[in-house]
Image (cartoon, rainbow, N blue to C red; front, side, top):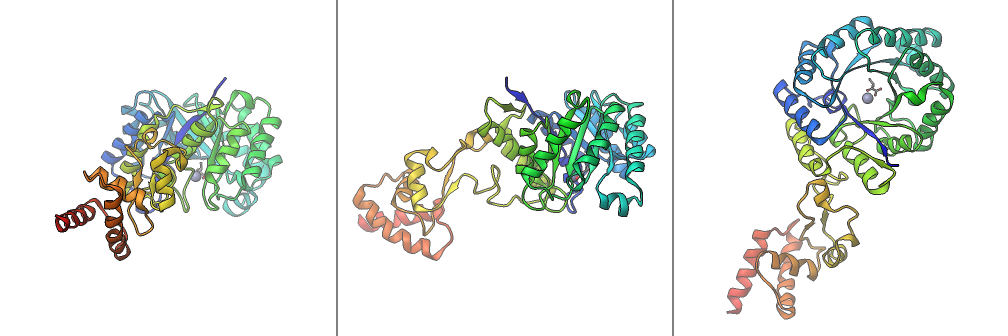
Length: 386
Ligand code: KIV
Ligand code: ZN
């Protein structure tokens, strides 16, 4: 049977905390509604204790969304948890996300505490949160740099208190995929009652491993992935939603599935990028400007003959009408004939030879030859010929 993987979107929390990505309430609501339409299972709407603005955003989104679980972040501090619960009071499906740092660095330098005291705080936070809502997610911050043995003790304590979701963040993007996968496996094998909980992967991209680590987590038993649109987030970002979803769709078909409506991936990428003024790198997988653009002659010839020669994803499945054949000095005759035909010039072999000679001079002078340049060139050649 195909296993369902839940998509937990944190674009409006971990993503929005990036400098310069701040959204106003109206923009947040637009993004939240689109995320619900996209099919995310859980939407982390903010960190209510952090500011009145974040509190209001969580409250507003809780009132508006109908089918998505709305999650609010808190530290393992009673006041935080109480305020998160208040912000969530109108949510149809509320979830409190509470937690504490568990790595040696966090225990010593952030909390000036001891491993035993941290377990006690984690346990108490989940117990307190359970007084407000049934659905309580616990995060073991910096789990990536926490020993598996100690992490299992922390997680056992919160499972015993009724945590419903166990978030194992690689907060600093430190882990390698085998290591992170093994961590999840260790918890699956060593925490009693974990089979009744969701296990969540929350990865950061400091070494460019966030997506690979999230997939390794799924293979080893994680049932939820925390991610952001375009992979935005602290420092090098979070796991990119579109990447995880398309990997599961393409490489694990029949094994794992999500609820994501994939043709919405590109439109939502643009919405998030435009509203946060956060450009997407051109070569970004799935949603980058060049993700379905072909510019070298060999690739262009191959893709014109048969799209799958150089594309593993049909662009329509992620909301792009068609792949692009970009005309540059590296383009060959096949691309030139194809693009000329698109604008109404069906060239014979001899005509193509003439046009190609002129094209290559123009292409050497500029980065790209667009439809206007091409049209001007073709008109002037054919005018001369007449
Ligand atoms: O990266 C992280 O550890 C987090 C937690 C607050 C969930 O974002
Ligand atoms: Zn994070």
